[in-house]
Length: 258
Image: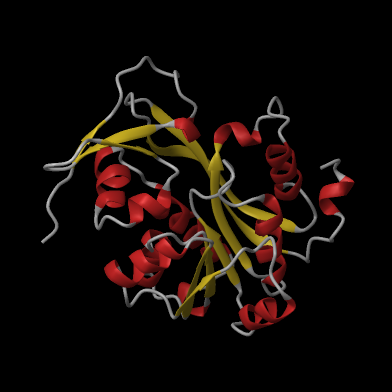
């Protein structure tokens, strides 16, 4: 049985740190306390149960549940079912979203991430969740890698808490989107500010253009509490689900000035 880890958050005023700057201290017996950034996933995944304790127990992350609910609601509108889905879970991490999808009875489930530690953590903690797990950079897939992934005939793409902050660039998301079959389903989440027009960053502009483009029909869009910050303040995201209409053209990013 995995014991509890001693975790300490830095003392600071609310909003002193941006979300992608948050960190914690891990206090290990007989060792000096370690400072670990929240986005240092490779380091967190190496320690069994630390990710779950930090984000789901301590900070009350709700996103896998919310995004899977968004997908379920969207499917219900056209009387389709989870058992018909062949899912690519992009930014799969240690399998938290995959576990939700598997519990819903998806037909096929494949994980993908860019760091090997994510797959190693999944193999250790949730070995039966995915039918396959790719460690690939979706910004730089070779033709052979793309063909291998396309052989799964995915009709659903999910990505949870991985868009923005440099984790999954828009280019990688578009690549996965285009691998998806026509009329496939997409379910993901993103920080609420990314949909605010005052955010003129390249990622924010691109994702807003994509969500409201002819390439995607949105079935579900809802603001919800993603998790707590280290100061105990709620962090709000949007859960989004919809259906692909067509591939996104290669010049999409340049056409919107990115």
